[in-house]
Image (cartoon, rainbow, N blue to C red):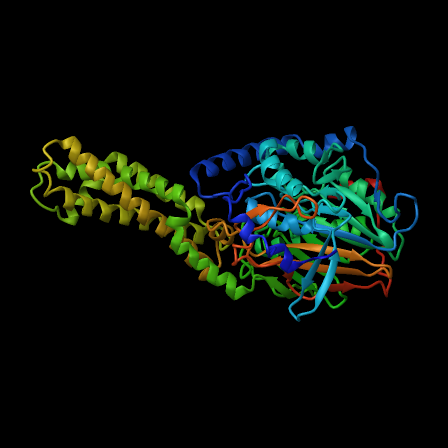
Length: 597
């Protein structure tokens, strides 16, 4: 029995039964609040440590020696050794964030069958994949056993429909998986462990899958340095030696190199910026038919005249990224943008939510309240001593300039905003935009201090104790800073993205949008064609209820959540046939070709 997309969001006939008692709620984690000072500090330390030790000890080199694995996991044949006529495979990237978004995707991935309507109104029946591929960044904010369990393992275990088998899972390592040196990733995905939601088989952080009718899927590991190590190159050279001239490849990388190469400064990296080109042309010895990547948390598809596809599908559960930046409509090698999700105009409108920065990021508001208090409290206390009325602004400015503490903290504020500023428009732009941003905070802190002094001065005679007066001034400064400071940050991010095309990550991580999610369902049919179904979730459910034990996963959407939308196809299915053999590059290179990268 097929599960229609509408059935995933609503199960009529249960509302009356569920109203008899309060609905159960899953114990899932909320979306990561990236501007929570605690999260920022923890993530920063993890990044610093992983970058420092990752450069000195590359775990991939150790695993290549200690953890042998087959050159390819064979899914071209079934368990009895007979050629498979067809295979279904699901691709999910950038998952393991909030429960609602991660579980909404997981429950559709794990459904035995799913009927999906495309934009033309046609309904396509799809089947849950025998193979599940995680495309990178399997957990947020940083990798640990606890975070993987709560944000990734638990949602997929609960989502497994009791009417289907556990898929075989293969995982690509992303930068967030590397933040603990790949230790937790290796424990979870590379030791053959069983989970209620999947079975793992890979032994290393990179792998090759042999699929029906001459298709192959390769998963790479670029580590934090976006670099291919020599054992990995040799591994894929040996895999390429097993391919026939007419075979076709799906290449899974944690990052969309075809986008990053155009929008990120190369900084003299040279050969490292062309890792994927090297792997495709020199190692595999043939053109790749489909490139898949995550890292950018949206859906975007480029296609060239030969029908080759470059698809970003990083909507497995993490916060949404904008689609109106980076602007990569047409590439020099003939790839043209065909579809993006959400649409660009929608993405631009969503950026305006940054004006609600104060409400969306309450802990950052607390932090900014503390900063504004430290900037102006001493000045306000000095001005209130013996004051008979509101001091002139010039007196407030002089008092701030004479306060060593305020000057030091003000300089640190400007240096912090300069360090935070986006560098994609150049060093000078970063310095100017950061200084202006910091200067606005200092000016507002000064004006707020002036206002607080004006309020506290008339009360000086009534508030007989100076301690009471100073505490009153501090509370006013804290409250004003908690409102004004985050608003300035939100306005800065809004203008940076929509006007100056900067800060795409920072302007959307601040919003923690759980909607507009996506994953890919791939079907290799009996005729050797590959059909890609891009599945989208406009709005994920916020409320859940227990499923029927014999038919449903553990949790299903609560029908009272009427705003939730069922999964639908983002665009009509993309069909890639096998009508022509792909040209083969003769220079596959001997194993020692790895020394060339």
